[in-house]
Length: 557
Image (cartoon, rainbow, N blue to C red; front, side, top):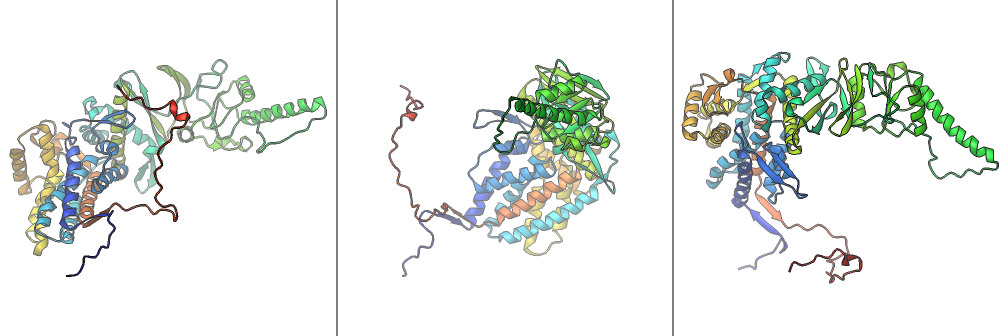
């Protein structure tokens, strides 16, 4: 008998074979179970405490998983899923995790029966292709300009969220905002850059009903000299700069030797004249409002206010871009390069208002603005944060529809249809792949099942009834009403999902499940390579320095 050969170091842990797949499946299921209760309109909220003691109260799948700190590698990759989903399409973050968890769960049985993971993956991918074909078949086109349809759509996205109780409010905000900031790329394609051109300003106080989409931009700034400058200008001419309106200091230290006392005055005069010239160049265009991203000296402020021009300084670059988009101005880097065409005349009103105890500058009533600000009011910070998350989701949905105006039924109806079709197809599949294929078909039922669970109805009865309705394939639009748990026609209830979201959900979930199934070996405990000669540092006993004496922990008695 040969002596055993050690290949791996002692410090490494290695798991391989079925054990790994089971562990991964368990971890993914654990994640899916955390999130499961947050699906649908009757969803529960999760309260998360982060390290700094802040509280997040939400039921947005992505927001929850983002806050979790996980040890298991497979679970971490599940979290990536919902993040991808959130970045790509903005909604369906919860469904993606539940679906992936379920796909892995049904694969568990096959791995026990020593199926090879690649066989399962092949079957899954086949199921995915067929599922997408089914989606294409039952999708229905809509008219983007029909506001009611859009409202229904966005509402079904928000119905599952905390702000569902405020009805149309958030949906209206989302549609207005995306309609404003949309850019036509030609060929009927609209691109909406939510991050860049839609700013959400949260101002605590007031009621949620006071929230609105401004036809323009709002910034958290006051004019430079509140007493002297006008705080309200109708039809302002706006100039945007990103250069400082103050005297340029030398790049490095400059020494100027002054021989006569008059030279000192000359120097000062030069500085003053420099600034005066700068201001004169700007005032040539008769602006009413000058906004700069950098500083603005007292002297420049004096010249501007003398000419009756309001000024705002030190604005964020992103805000400046939004203002440029809203009022049609061009951001200028050097005042001497100003042209008439750079002046923004699109705004209808510039006004500084006090909300709560802060001043906000509004540039509103713009003609055809390409950027906007959504002003959210609410009782507390937590509520505002949650509303903002919901608004982001709603805007993403509206954006998806603008991009690809196709709809699918919500309420688990799509999944049931896909499931029923795949079950029928599975009988025509030959060989060993048939069983995993059928299992994938069953896994799609996780979504309607979870919906039913969260409503608190009899799950088995509801699911059986639903399967019966779908089995003969008569109406693809029958699903579960998430509020009552009854089986209804989604067309009448106006519960819809956008095609992009559903397709992305299916793709992400199945691809992720395949990836996790293919892992058959986990080697953990790999050390970082140390620099040669560094060696393990001997741990010295810690000597307390004088400086540490103040902050030592006092042991409780």
